[in-house]
Image (cartoon, rainbow, N blue to C red; front, side):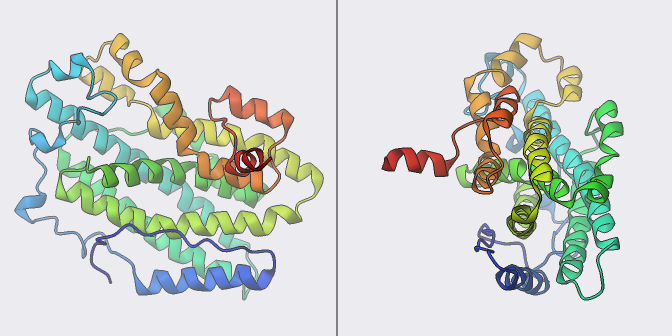
Length: 331
């Protein structure tokens, strides 16, 4: 077992034109999971006084450059209320994260259930499932220690989400788009917060760094799986995947980035403040940017066309992929 990381891990990125290079990536990911992994109750010092969660701790206060933290309404609240709002938001993100990873684990096991003997993906999927189990435990332990009534996903959305683990029975490619839709946006946010020093509490920072380090492997596998499989799909399945991808990403990104409705109700945040903080150009840019890697991947795989581009735009997540921007710059 490894100690909490001090540096952020980067995902493995290789070209996988042939099966040999694809299998090489899986071997590297399997080895990385054996060599460097974390356990929720062994590698996090939960009982260290410095890691204790106090809802009134000023380290939970949102920074001035945060979208909600920058509003006059938030800054006018008592310091204790500011701290509790900040903690509520962190805890809600962790609760939603563990709920998504619950769906992910069930989907991964459905995928692995049908794999023939000898397939290297089986071992990797079980490594990832094990890591996601520890993520769920550390997220839930954090939520428990806040003492707050954190619910996570809205009930209606949670009910619909129960269909997600069944996606691999229909399309494994769409399932791994769903995986990226849940993992890439939160990875984008967590990396930015760590880089910008927004995370002040040592428990939150430790959990984030462990999550980022292991999610780099999970994101890498999903991307390489799609690179390997999508070119082999027939025309109808490619078109269907291209159409459903922006729908999945548009929904998932909003779940991860939108203000928790329970937080708005709990602290009586006025709707005009919510609009000011979360429905402006900066919010729209963040929404587009958090799915940029997946959008670029879909363009690289030839899954973006004139028809589904309008779906990307309708969900507010369209921007010119890097490969097209580069081609225009070179022209």
